[in-house]
Structures are given as structure tokens and as C-alpha cells.
Length: 288
Image (cartoon, rainbow, N blue to C red):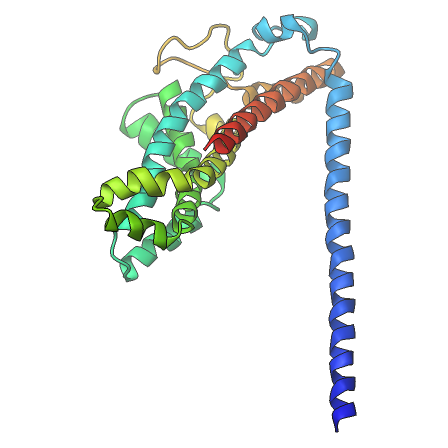
């Protein structure tokens, strides 16, 4: 009887080891395939676009000829767009997460709200473009302006920031909060001085991922009126604007082969901006 039990145990151990090895190979293969395609994409973009990437390309406005075209208008427009998206989405998103985690009663209504926020994080971006067109462009009469595009993109990334901030706040140990209460701190003092500093790395990680999505989106901005080419930079929130993805999209649609190289140079600039954003987020996260 004892030998039979030992044999069964040995069989289970061998089966689990075999399953572990199979899954390890599967996960390694999946990672390798993803890295290979990423490397091929980067190689293609760099080889095509590096010859067009220079100071004139950064400082020039769109032009009818590939050798004179530049991405300056799109670069400034993207920076100004993120300047609207970031404060609006972060303030509302983190505030919503704090309310749901620290103040709202845990009942069916709260659970219903949280489930719908998570569902909104997966809604296609084109739906947010239609919402922005209806609400900001027509109802509030902002027109096809920078403020309408910024608020539309803020709606797009808001659910992602709320979910990330909730997870970060939820991960703060309850013992730390209880110790703060025991020292006589109020609820808001505990949230401001204990919970938020401890949750800041997670909040920043989710926020920077959301903003990275915003700076690379095209479909919602096409709907809310981002121009394919403008020859001035926005001077107010009610100005016409363009962004880098719109310009890149416009260049890739042209038949001449040289425009594909110009688009590749624009992609390199966009990747550099994304890497800078992530580097800043990592620096702030490590600092705190």
C-alpha cells in the first residue's frame, strides 16, 4: 500500500515537472517571437527613416516635397495635447480612485461602477472619438480645436488611470493606514501623507502607459478634427492643430516611395518622445 502511494506521488511529481517544462518552453517561445517581430519593426523603421532624420526635419513644417517636409507642427501639437490630457485625466482619475477605495461604501452600486470603469478601459478608441465629436465639438461648441482633442483623449485614457490608481491604492498595507489613524491623523491626512506616497509608483506606471497610448492614437483625433497638415503651431486652446500620428498617417497614404521614408523618420521621433516619457516616469518612480 505504501509503495503504491509513493508511486502515485512520483507520477504526479513527474507530470508536474513535465508540465512546467512544456509551459516554460511555450512562454519562452512566445517572448522570443514577440521580440523578433519588434526587432524587425525597429530595423525597418530605422533603416528607412534615419536618412531623413535631421535638424531640418524636426524644425520644418509640412511641405509638398519629401526632402522639405518636417514634423515640427505635429511635435508641438502632440506636446500641447498631452499638456491638456495629463492634468485633466490624472486629477479626475486619481480622485475617482481615491473616492472609490477610501470613501465610497462597498455595495452593489460601487461594484457596478467599478465593473463599468474596467469595461470602459477596453472600449475601442473610435467610440471615444464619436463621444468627443458629439459632446465637445457640437454640444459645447468648441469646434475642431486643440481643447476638444485634448478633452477627448483625456476621456480615452481616464478609465485606465482609474483602474491603475485603484490597484495601487489597494496594494498599500492596511497596517500602515491603521498606524496613521493611531497617531491621530485624520482620514484625508492619512490619504495625503501615507496612502498616496506609497501608491505613487503604481499610479505613475499606469498613468504613463495611458499617456503613451494617448500620444499614439489617431482615430479619435481624426474624428474631432485634427488637421493632416498645418503650417503654424497652436497659439491657444481654440486653435487648429495636428499631431505626429496624424502626420505620419498622412505621409504613409501618399503614393511616392520617398514619403514612406519620411513617415519612418516621423515614427522615430514619436518613439523618442515615448521613450523620454517613460524615462521620466521611471525616474520619478525610483525617486519615491
